[in-house]
Image 1 (cartoon, one colour):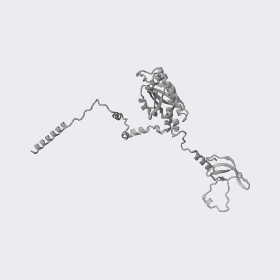
Image 2: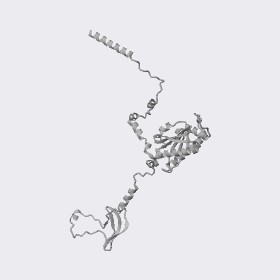
Image 3: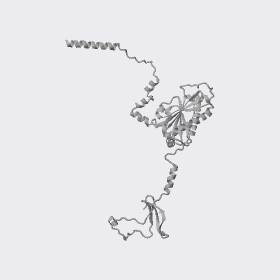
Image 4: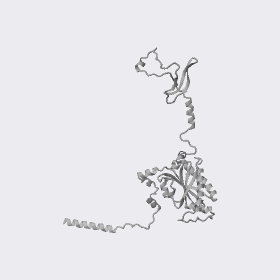
Length: 352
């Protein structure tokens, strides 16, 4: 009887559970047509810039990120780029006969391979060589600036957007005009570095395929400076890429906080130290002879004992400061005093 009652209670409880589950609202079905917002897209792609995202990085990711040398460690480089912007604004106004404004969008450090995979195409990639530093750099002109420059140089009217024809290769006229623009920018870059170090950036070649413009290993760190060129209602971007290997010859100069900074040197202190050293008194010993004697013989010496020197009369003597031999001279007499006339200088490390 008890067993039958338990089975009935269990069946009733099971029925109540099924009834509650059926009465519960159904979970919302995913809407395939819903548009993701920017925060969700950044989260999926791993571009979240929140502090929490930085804390969630694994140890390997932090090590890889720390391997990139931050451009903030080269304070003078940012000053050079600021100088470049001012020079380019003037030179591009003369080049295009138009009102041109140049500004820095960003300066970042990244791997060369990462940048090569993110180059916005279509674009023109100019490879240039730095003769004095014996290395290369890259200058990228995006399509918007290419068509804007061609439109301006060929007399296009103001107030109309440059016409773009995507999917076709650049013509010879477009390549020639952009090459002239690149040479102007490289000349300005040479002038920007001139106060720091005389250098010449020489144009090498123009490519449209990023793979043909490889100037460094894919894992090497580089500095990328994005410059914005605005010509009233037209314009585009110029991206300047400099591998750290290219900047290595002038790394010490780029570490300066200001032009002409001296690291660890103080000319006033150096002069004071040199003056004090010149007035320092030193003991100079004239060594007639050196002998090795048993300790018993030394202890048995008494007043009146004679020590025979193993040198002949007139033999040269040595002048020594501490344990360092300095000169060799001849022993003599001057005004009732013993004197030594220096004959030659000895090797500082000791000379037999």
